[in-house]
Structure formats: structure tokens, C-alpha cells
Image 1 (cartoon, rainbow, N blue to C red):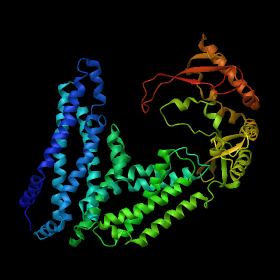
Image 2 (image 1 turned 135 degrees about the vertical axis):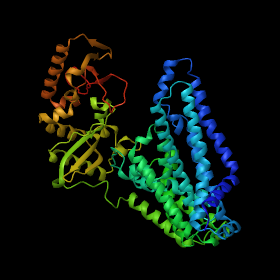
Image 3 (image 1 turned 90 degrees about the vertical axis):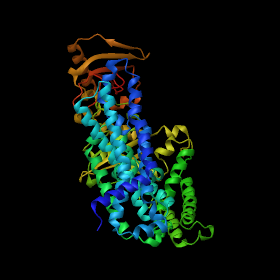
Image 4 (image 1 turned 90 degrees about the horizontal axis):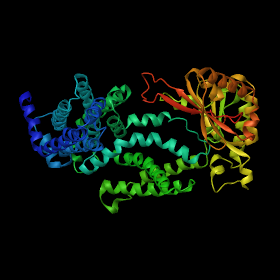
Length: 588
């Protein structure tokens, strides 16, 4: 049984063999942390007041928030340390030698793992302390700020471990350093690639999609993939305060480490020099990697060249899947004669991509024509395109969560009928894409004036919300709003004037048809009376006038905004404008 002393000696010996990496880490981290911080702060040394402002953001110099170079450097060091520490597994002579030692496999793993960890940790901790000393020399360092710097250092270490463990895990699945590197790239982005693929295809193929916020898979993709999570942790200031992010990083780190240890215990010695370590994995990995990658490449190329329609997605996807299958087989065997060796897995991958694209191309799921059953809908809201510049709400200008874009109504039947007409238009080929496209299916421009794009929000009895975007008739939309606005509560929710607290309005300006704004010299009481009179006019306005008459003026309100502790804004005032086409106001 190996003693603790010899165990430490083996770690030191491993570090000594990788001394070039230790020196490189030390020099680069020294230049990118304390030296960079000193140069950056020294440029403001002549202005003490400005220099003091850096106290709030000084910890950013530790994790790379102020320097993209440091973020890239940490990632590269994690790659270098991981590959150099376990490259002995990829050479048969070295692997036989190490496995012939009187050491258990978990001990060999621990020696290489800890040695690599120290190669980064020691220089990084030393450079963090030196960076803090730079802040102390400049007179901006405090005890609490030093503590914040060490917490930021902790997130930097976690970010390093994400890439380090990803690299080690890839090493346990491969038998060559090249495939270990490629495997690290794949594992680092694969969860994000898979989770965002279906939403991307939905937006590309379907005509009625409407995205209010990221879907659950898209949100999870930022926390389940090592590379995106690595970047998020280092790009955000005070990322250590994001409990969910830190938890996700810790879970990924532990899972990758545990999986790596388990795989190393069963790692076959004869796998050294092979592309992959386990015989059953080549066809499985080829199918899992090539399918999402091929479709992603087609979407990326289509977006880059600006091609319209979906035919190029299909053509590029099929071309990409064929090329990827051949490329992966070449990486496996490094022999052009062996490209067809795994033809069965290639057929499976190509067939899956073809079926997947057919499902989206012909909408076998009925996404574009889907409409919840009326009895299952609790409320419906609609948002025509014209509202984007028509109604501006005070809540939209705060740093808090955005207000619900849709004004939901209990009069389900009114908007349900409008949504049904939108689906009928979809079946006729009249969609938001065709309405705004130069290759529109409308016979004349006059025909297109009869339609308007409107997004719908269906709030089901279960609480779930379904969003769609249809092309509907202009007159039908106006008639629907006329019926909805017969209720005073709906009007108060729709018109922004009712979202304004009159006591917080500090000034009112009027902009006439000549676009010449002029502040109205009113007292607080007069401003309140003016806004109250406007509210009464809005409640009594015929909604049809909003779509037929042209405004002759516009109100602009300056509203006093007191930021709370959760908001981070330095602006005490916000200007909001009125959004109705009635009376002498155009927007609010």
C-alpha cells in the first residue's frame, strides 16, 4: 500500500514533468490579472473620484469580466491541463507502464487529477492575492471587497473545473489525444445543441410561432452544457450570488468527475491508440453527434447567407449528414477505404434526419393549425402588430420584469372567432411571413391592406399559456376590439394612461402635427385635472376612431421613478408617451 509521503511525491513528480505548463500558467495569469489590473487602474490614478468607483467592480478583474482574454485563458489552461494529465492513457507503452505500477487505478487517477488541479490553482490563487494587493496600493481595497474578490475567485475555479472535468471525461471515452480534444468540444456544447434544436426548427418551419420568452429547453441549455455555463459564470459580475448557476455548475462538476472515475476503473488497456475506448460506442456516438450537428449546420448556413424558405434547410441538412457520417468514420479509422464500414449507423442517421425534416416540413403535428378547445380556455388576449408602436406602458421602461404583453379577456368567444379566421388564412397560405414577404401570395397590395398580423395568447384552465401568431382581417380585428372595449375594466388595462400614477408625473409636454414638443406650464393640480379629463375621454371614445382618424398631437409625460433596492438604475426620471389615437394625444 502506497504511503502518504510517496503519494505526495508522485504528485510532485507529475507536476515536475509538466513544469512547462506550470510556468506558462503562472506567466499568463500574472500578466492578465495583477499586471493588467495595475495598468488599467493606473490610467485613472489622476482622478481619485473616478478611481473610487472601481471599488464596486474591482472583483471583475479576478474572473475576466473586464477582460475577454482572461476568460479565454482559463478555458485554454483547462484544456491543456486536462489533456496533458491523461494523455498517458492514449499511448499503449505508457498505459501498460502505469497500470503495471503497484497502484490502484483510482490512485493513478487521483495523482494525475490533483497534479493538474494544482498546476492551475496555485498560480491563480497567487495572482488573485497580487491583484488584491494592487487594489490596496491604489487605496480602494477594503476587507469586504477582499472577501468579494475571493468569492469571485471561487467562481473562476468552478468555471475552470467545468472545462477540466469535461476534458477528463472525454479522455475516458477516447483512446487518442486528438479525439479527446474533439470529444471535449462535443460534450461541452452537446446538451445545448440538442435542447435548442427543436425550438430552432419550429421557428424556421412553422408559420404561426410567437416567442414571448425562451422555452424551458432553451433556458436549461444555458445550465446543462459546460461551455455555455463556463462563459456565463465568467461574463457576469457577482455570479457567485446566482445560486441556481452555482448549483448547476457544482452538479455538472460532480457528475462529470464521478463518471470519469467509473469509466477509468473499467478502461480497457488495449484501447490506447484507438479513436474510442469502448467497442460498442462508435456507431452510437456517430448517430448521436451527426443528427443534431447536421441540422444545426444547415440552420447556421441558412442564417449566414440570408436564404429564405425551408428548402435550403432540407438540402443542406441532407448534405451535411452525409458528409458528417463520412468524416466521423474517417476520424475513427483514418482510412478512406473504411468510410463505408459503419454504413448501418450512417443509414440510421440519414433516415432520422429525413424523417425529422419531413415532420416539420409537412407539419404532421398540426402545429400551425392547432387551436385549443374553446371550453378549455379561461382567457384570451391578442396583440396586433400595430400595438408595438401604438401603446407604450410605464412598466416597459423599468428594470423590473416586463409586464404581460397581452391584455387577457374573459370574453373568449370574441377572440376565439378571430383566431379561427386566422387559422383559415393559414390554410390559404396567408401568414405573417407571406404578408411581409416580397414574394407574397396576395394578388395586389390592396389585398394585403385588408390584413394585419396579430399574436394570440390562450390561457388554458390548467394555467398553461399557448402563443400563436396569425394573419387576420383588419376589419374583424377592429370589430373584436370594439366589443372587448365595451367593458371598462378592459379599457383600463389596455390604455396606458390608466397605468400612470398621476402624483408621479412631473411634467407634461405636447407635440403638435409639426413635431414640435412644448412643455405645458401646469401646476400639479392642473396636471392631475388634465390627465383625469383624458381618462374620461379614453373611456368614452369609439374604438373605431382609433383606426380611422389621424392624431393631431402627442402627449409626453415625464414620470418620477424611485428605484427600489432590487432595481439597478441611476435614472430618476423616465419619459413615457401616450398611445391612443383619440383627442389630441397620439401615444401613452
